[in-house]
Image (cartoon, protein in one colour):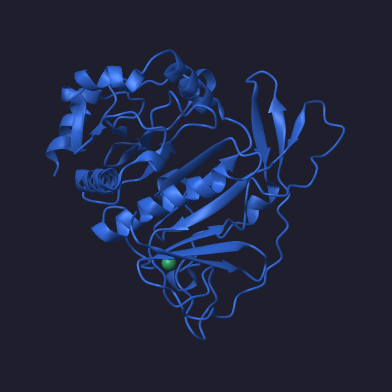
Length: 348
Ligand SMILES: [Zn+2]
């Protein structure tokens, strides 16, 4: 295991903040803002799609693209504006989202609705990758990225241990094109009380066949990059022009079963995929990155992988999900995966 330090701090509003670092963090906390919290999300069932919808009305009040000096994800400064992290320094910080869609102690859902309702049990966390306001997975140092990978692993452990949690998903939304409201390098983690529809389908597929293991021997034309034991590739069935997946060549249910060497290889490859994206059009490339690890109970067949969905078709063209994608679930793509793989391979 990477020798890292972990410090748990309870914020004045009751939320948990966990600081991770390669060195002990001993500074006393700085003053915090005490802002009222009233998250009261709940679930309603969609009877035709047969899936849950989460209602979290308070999310409308989220901080929207604040100026740099009011970034809530920067460290707090003595005498300065109190941020979410009341310490002068940190390496990686994880805290409970102030605008959660799922909470550890949800209020009972409303009564009298014409569809089944449920408690929005779970947890939503923010993962701040670095104290530096500007940067990305690509610009972190190798050591910082490896620490971050260990943090994800620790969060999987902590969140799957919560009562009622059935699926845990770290993800990152990057760029205003995908609706990012804060630019400071960060991701999020959702711990769900159910297996969401996409994971239900993937779990089913892996129960039937080792889909990725069967695919790997055929991926040479789709290969983007690799590290010992890992492959980054454009799936031959990509639904986004520059979609990339990162997966271990041997089946792992999640990164919690990676060896030390695999943790390092995975972290390096993830950073290089983002570096390739940024090199593509010479600017920060927007994407949604999701980790698909085994939902609870699927550990024996599920194959961990990371999926990147970038919304760009070209430097100045966004791919919008519209009629056929939203209304029918059928994607139409105007670039062939073997061609976008070649571009991503040659760009670095
Ligand atoms: Zn910041």
